[in-house]
Image 1 (cartoon, helix red, strand yellow):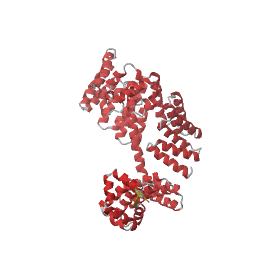
Image 2 (cartoon, rainbow, N blue to C red):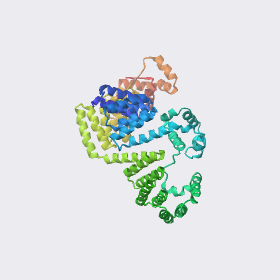
Image 3 (cartoon, rainbow, N blue to C red):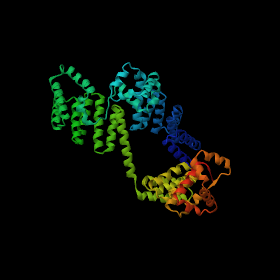
Image 4 (cartoon, one colour):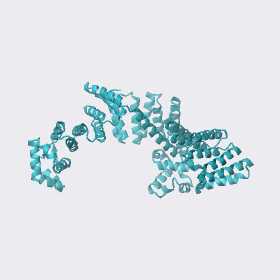
Length: 541
């Protein structure tokens, strides 16, 4: 990848992160013009098109990605996603499955496949047209509050009339939640300790107690006794009499070793007691028993979720992620998806912190300095970027990278680095000066003056800051009529311009630049100068 291509890709990535989709697409397109066989560029542009809701173009770029790099999982993920948005579900499923042949353990592909299969099921039956839709939504606490929102009702009507629009609405969490309710997907990821207490909830108690009463008469004596022990265990659990609850649940297991729920209840008690290893052990047994006895996949998912929670409590983040992913493979829910997202953030942050090494950061900085001296600015950027990853709290690395971006006329990226510099250290004078220079190059002289003023507040004698401020010295426009019209729109500006003292100061600054330093010491005068600069009534030279 050439230096120019790498720079355009970085600019595109930065724009995409800020949701500037058109700008990102433009950068990737320019990069592709320079390197038409780079699969990463097509993949990135596909992502930008998808976010801009240009799904056909996203698909075309994803197909190009796969053609260029047929063993790269992300290409299949891009293609599968684009096809799903276009409601071409069978092709999307086929794409995800083909990608999994290349990378069987790829989480993104697995999750995408599960999601698109759910979309296909929903599109075939269109749950939004079900006759009992309003009853379901009103009776479920997840969606009950939505029904008072006119925008939500409008969204439902759209999905009822046009089910094909579902794929375009998946970014709305309300849609995912509604879909879960309509498809009968129960909540997962609730705090473990609540499971034996669920019978206390009005909406749950009916569904749980009625089936038991209907079945009890036909159950063998051992199973009836097991249910009785479970009820006693639930009552003890509610009272937080955990040892008593364990005794009843264990008796239930002795009487009926084929029922997964008793093992899950035991695991819930251990979780409450902070006996996380024992909780995991019971959940593992529950999964084994459930598989052998063809238990509901939702209960299997619950066992995996509970193991994930236990590992999360033990701060074993990677194992927690593994089991949340297993839960998702059994029964996909928004709650577990959120848990996975949170765990991913924790893992990334840990990896970031583990990567920090100030010594290596300095080594990278020195390599960057040498490349900068050689005029190899893209290479210098790579070294400074590595230094930032190794020590992200040191402002000088951002400042050095900003200098490189300035040399390459990538002023937006340079400005972003300068803002990071002064965020990390308000007294880092070079950051303010560099920011001023970049703003000048971007023809934002008013803001440039502010940056130079900050530098002069730190060091009134700094020659670079003085020179930058002088280069932004003001002169009243040669068109008095235009100045007068603009001034009349702002009484404060008119007052400043009519002030004899201020007019004298402006003339003095032009004839004697050394007077600038003294004037800036007066906060009132400095504020008036700033007002003139930012008003647009002042010519900058």
